[in-house]
Length: 225
Ligand code: CA
Image (tube, rainbow, N blue to C red; front, side, top):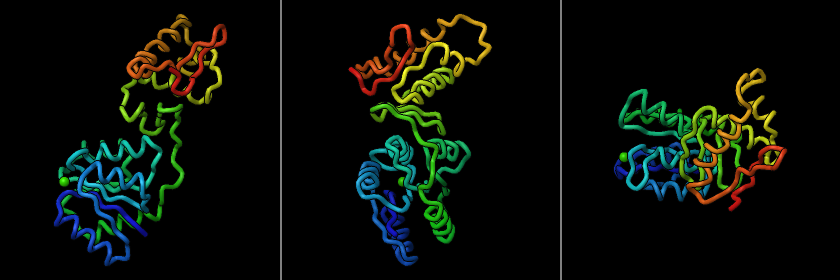
């Protein structure tokens, strides 16, 4: 069983690696964020032990990038800073577990084994259209690896469109799903929010992926230019 340890403090990386090998794991070590990301992408591991503060790209960045690509390798984040904020952020980026330094090696092994056992198992699938990815679990949206901040209503509209997988969502269906069946306001609110989404998801990337289908509604065309 091969695991990846991404840790820039070499003595610590070496100690973790030696300990895990003694426990029967095969171990690869990366000493910075980009190398860790590359290895995780290309080589495939049973689990990843990921330090938070790394040169090049921090652990959150690595985690976020992998999850955005649909890579659900179990990740245990090591953090030197302890505090709820970091833990919440680590979980938010799609990490599975976290451990504050200094940690007991026994605890590290136990947590790692638990993660491997759980595996990368069924996850709420991310919804995507070309380079556009929406994660209903973390409520995060990416395009070409860049995080795009959306309001709750924009998120709901995007999810409604992506769930059609290229099919047309009529204005009435959108109103019903995103604003609720009893929405008393102006139905043109849909157009307004489609414009907001385009401004955030398409314009900065030079794309036209949210298409207006005359008289019918809207649909998403992956990476349309
Ligand atoms: Ca570090």
